[in-house]
Amino acid sequence: MSLSANPAHFVRLEDLSDRELEDVLDLATRLKRGVSRTDLLGLSVGLLFFRPSLRTRTSLEVALHQLGGHPVNLNAASDFWELEARDARLMDGVAPEHIKDAAAALSCYVDAIAIRPALAGKSWAVDRQDEQIQSWVQHSKVPIINMESALWHPLQALADLMTLRESLGELQGKRLTIAWTQSPTPSSPAVVHSVMLAALRSGMEVRVAHPTGYDLDDEVLRQARELAKARHTTLDTGMDLRSAAEGSHVIYARSWWSLQTYGKGSLAAQRGARQGTWCVDDSVMELGDQTRLMHPMPIRRNLEVTDRVLDSKHSLIIEQAANRLHTQKSLLSLLLRH
Image (cartoon, rainbow, N blue to C red; front, side, top):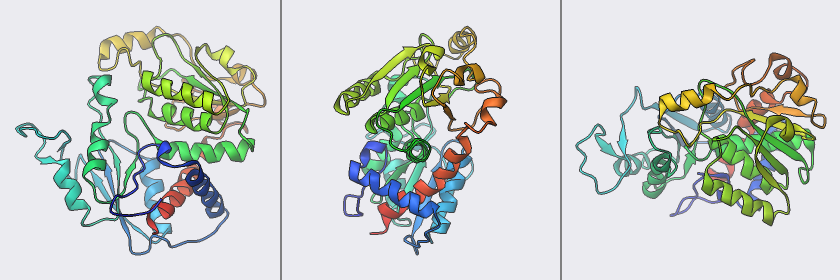
């Protein structure tokens, strides 16, 4: 990865080659052990949040400070305004500025731009295009870093890979269960998409447990099946929770929207209320092979996962959060130090 006239963007984990991914994780491990670097001395990174953030915002700001860089933190709700992503539009709506112009201006001030784009929330066919993040990639003269779009959360996937390696060692042949969980505030499938592909890329056997109607994105699943075949591993989807948990080394709990009812609030609520209990408790964990628990947070205790599991020695949720700092420092260093 190098900075050039055509900057290297980080929109999904697949933007890193296998060698680059190994370099990021290797450096992250050394940084976690206490290696000090100032690779970003004199550099600034704009952090643009169109949605709330806790761990992503904090870990990126601290990462930049520790590398000698400077974060420029902007919130759409208070610091700027809605931006138009579509080209050749008559801009007579709510957006007073096009991403084309905002990207050109910010490229004059900062050395990279990290973005958490807004989701319209009306149509999955529209939101899955990740139109905003792609517009920034098209028009920016500096690297764009995706802080979670509709389809992808590559920063979380990096930290999760580091956590999986620390806990399991060699990942080839290990079993990961991604388990849908009950929540009144489900998220996009971005985390699940990214973690699923990251695990398959590492040779893990992946199972996805979810109720009927909560299938992941069709195109992402197609990519996942091709990747499983290429890496000589397996992907099973649509399983029930207990069957998927049997023999698993890690259960990754996460709530996500039904893409069938996406944008249909009342219908989605009705479907969610009918799903029964999808909670990771001791009885689920005991089905696995010394099973670890992962979740990207925020997490609704005793609804998605019980207190006993979250606070047990098998829970890796704090390690995941901690590794966000180290993997993001490593990524920023390798992306920008040239």
